[in-house]
Length: 452
Image 1: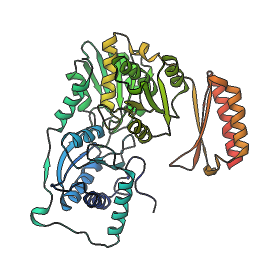
Image 2: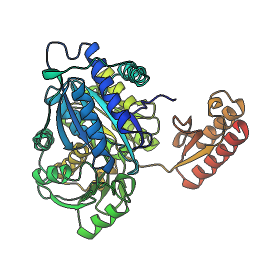
Image 3: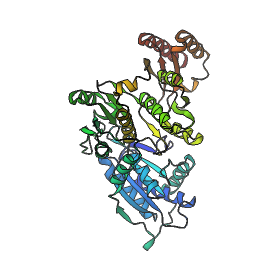
Image 4: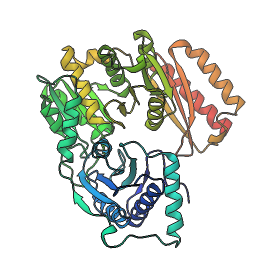
């Protein structure tokens, strides 16, 4: 059996890979591990539990709540809220643990469990490993030490979570959004109520799509992975901009008034300059991954903003930010972390801050996003090859060197092994799309012949 915890919690097909028994067992294990680590010492432990609207979240929530309460943890059940809301409430309420049930942008049949430590921060890898070991030990028959009587956990609904979180979002905005018309695509997910409410309270005129979750339609042809409906709605309603979330609303992509996409790199660029102007861009630095468009790097160099790049994954961005005291980071996919106001990517906060910049400057989003030019980027996934030899193949190294010489300063090549699939990703950027396609295909052919 492989490792249960991935880079973003435990995920799988609900009721097949991720069963009620697994959810219950992991929750009990998490309670015991945190107790042993001293997290609960001197007080009665409390956990915040939330979920996205997936149908499977209903029974998985019940399993998680049962597991925690059976281990002596009091549970505050906040219902359907975004992942960053659960992280925020875990910190704001002084809870010892947060649990979010979601598979983010994945299709409806999937679900996942993510644990947050005290303060709303991602649980340390070492603690995840201990939880997994503890779960496996007890799954094979080792009995739990179970509390009885008054020692069992109590469960109650915490209905104030919605308003508390929205108030937090409004409270950290630099200015109001009066005069803006915004279309919000909630992906029929966890932000379907939160995001429209927050934008409305901030003063924007709001049009909604993808905000009628029924448990089955989450991420279906809507949200940040399907922008066509948002583009059409923005143009139809004459809106200033549109924002799109994923299922658990930890990411945000946008479209401008013409319907053109504004991706995570462009959002980062806009927010970096806004935060520098406000004096909140600590160390004049923004953190992004190696997959960020070369145009973003060139724009930051031109604007005098330092760029630190990490491996792909918002967890690596967050680790770099926390380790070195940086305030802003994110990914091209729309995971944007504003560390002064959130402990994780927050799609609603990101959209609000982007809209606030439009309102404050009086400039259209298209103009603001034009601070960077997105260079054409071509990505080819090469399957059925030995991805472990990417860094050791001389033939491949020579092909990459040739490609980099051809592209010069206005192009870039990136080859990396997939962390989850048996394939190698070939990414090429160039000033000309046809050149990017040609170079990418040539490198893909070499990957196939050298590693196949």
